[in-house]
Image 1 (tube, rainbow, N blue to C red):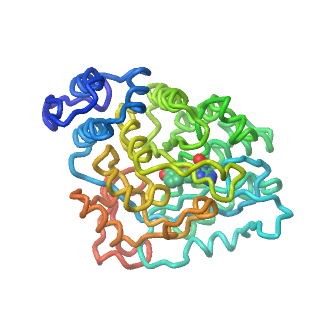
Image 2: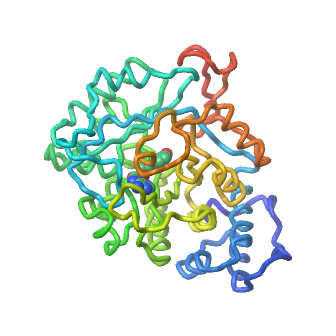
Length: 394
Ligand code: V47
């Protein structure tokens, strides 16, 4: 029985909405009402049906069963210590070669300094990812993390994608497990979901042929979960992938989740083509963005949270997505580089009050969470340094 099952029998009823346009969705609707797992063919139909409202209605049913009226957000800061990257993925506008005059690599002191910059709200999470740097050692990254923990002991460190872990392992001739254990000892608390792209080998060969393959990404995730780290997971869509590739990707994530239970949140990521070698590809539409949120909610019956990442889909669409299956909108972010290098026109960060407004105007109840979805309570209005005002209710 998946997490989509309505054990109490409350939440949405089993009536097919009168507005349903695509009668082929009826069997899927019946499975969703019964809390049954959807299969590959169901996934394809959800991607192909023009009846987005019915797909969204079903996803919203599941979302409300799981989370009621709550939309989660957090107060976080992204840190990208370097954009120097040995890989040359066609999907990416962020990575640069070390001799590129625009490339940057922060010193440890700069990372620690930046972490505290613009500190107007009590941040509860650092989200840290970077390029695959040719010379920075695992020891350097461990010192970076330990230094952040020392300076900001209450801040959760969500750091390094599965791709970075595999790269460290290869460079240092260590196993994935050894790398992960060293990073945990240094202070890493959980991992973000990036680098998964789409698992199809055909597509990976074109968009990210320098990266580990999908099987390796999933293998690192499994080991991370075994050593006690929770992680997120993602899918990059809107480039060269087919609907079959998307459904296969979601099912492979679901299978790992059946085994480990370690994925907390799924984030569908729309491809931004600007400034990449794939810039001839058209940007995704709002229709496709909402559909990806909804299909993920319906297929990933064992992953608790679906995030509509406002940086990627714009605050406007991320807000509407709160009625199409998403129950999270991400956070304040403060300084985003990966999507902005690829032409994102959204702002670099949002204030806590902006997030509250977006959520409330979608008719949802804002819930400030920490990275692991525990409630964060602010006792003095929230504008103070970490340590002074935050309580995380366990
Ligand atoms: O792994 C890179 C993607 C990811 C482009 O775990 C691009 O909470 C679109 O993973 N167009 C990084 N996408 C972002 C990410 C993430 C974001 C927010 C929250 C979390 C989380 C994770 O962005 C990369 C890649 O899949 N990406 N370049 C591009 N041109």
